[in-house]
Image 1 (cartoon, rainbow, N blue to C red):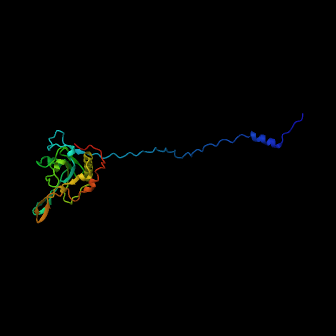
Image 2: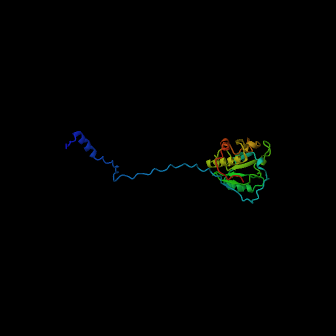
Image 3: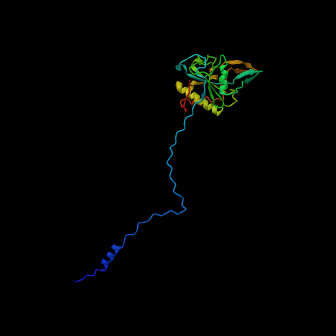
Length: 243
C-alpha cells in the first residue's frame, strides 16, 4: 500500500483548525476606590402653585346685620372708600386718623347708626365683613351722580388716611385685588364696575381757611384704581367669598 504524505499546505490548514478560538473579552473592573454609580433620579413633574385663598373674618350667621334685603341681580357696582377723610380743623385741612385693624373698624361701624359697610381691608391685608352682600349698607350718602348707589353696590373700606400721602401697603392692595375680583366674578361685573367714593360725591364743604374743600376724596390719589380693575376677570384665587 502506498502511503501519501500530506502536503505542507494541508498540514497548515489542519493546524489552524486545531487552534482554539480566542477567549471572549472580560469586562473591566472599576478600581477598588472608585465611587459607586449614582442612580439617575426620575424627572419631577412641577405642580402648579395653589391659588391664594381669601380669608375673611365674618360675624356669626345669626348676627342682626341690618340693611335691606336685595337680589344678586341688583348689584352692579363696587365702591372703594378709605377710613380717613378731609375735615377742617382750626382753619386748616386735616385728615382724620385711621389707626386699627380691619376687625377694629368693622366693629366700629357696628356702633354707627347711619353708617355701615360690607368689607374692611386692613393695612396687613386682613379682611373683615360687617354686612352680608345681599343686604344694603349705608356707605354712600349722596345719590345725585348715580341713583340708588347703596341699593346697587358693595362697599369696601381701606384702612388708610386717604390724604394722598400715606401709601397703600402691598398686602392691602393684594387683598383688595383678590376681594374685588371675587365679587366681580360672582356677579359678572366688568372692570368699570369698580369706582371710588370720590367719583360718586362731588359735593363741597365750606371753605377751610380760604381753601375749597371736597367732602369726599377717598380713597385718595395714591390708590391704583386701574391696577385693581385689571384684576377683574383674572380671578387668581380660590374662594370662599361672598356671604
